[in-house]
Image (tube, rainbow, N blue to C red; front, top):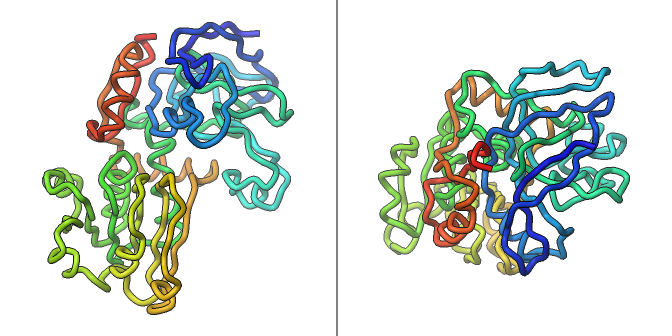
Length: 347
């Protein structure tokens, strides 16, 4: 076994603290890489606190992982020692179901293996994430990180980036489309960058007037304060797509009214309460409300290559791992522009 160290929550009532644990040995098809940077996702805090479902403890969070390869198995063909490498939200899947066969491992019908708070495909061995110094992953779930990208800014692409890129590609958002991005946070700011790079006319919908300057700096063409009834009315029936990144409760009917005929409201945020809406909000205008998860491995690599070509990374604040609890407190207040990333050299 490989000795590793990281930060873990021992129970859902305890704070993260240093913890030493064991990784598996590098198998024939495995890649081991030392972790340089790990992004901080809002879901890390949700899972530590059992907000969504009972967790597997001890829990080492982190699924936005970038590092450099230090060992490869003797059958590995895709990586060599010294390569930059990354891992996102998954470390394995069944490989055989219809979804996996289509490159949609994120929708594995038999359950993929999450990078942390999950189990390997043996359904027994717990997975531990990127708040640690090293990780061992099957080469099929390791991503090539382009050399020209800022590594710290690249880490959040492996969750926040692909979560927004995947639906935009699925619905073929691009030139000639009017795209609204609802919410300007860790997900939203990536939605703006991708929407603009794909050629769409991008409007940011936000409750915070003070974010307008940031939205325009990110490339947004328009900004609408959703608390301002006059501004909201001015964009009724205007958008082909709304990319909804908000994880707080909000009124979907208000935003469905902003869609054109056949418009699509795409949910990537996960509010705590079930959505409520009248069927007429959809019927009048043949509108759709849809959801999207992360992308598959091939699409995630496509996204990274797209970012390399278009010089896109996340806007981040680099932190010491000892400051993780303060970062969580600030994240809850929305006090981050727009993603925290842990410098793992501080572990």
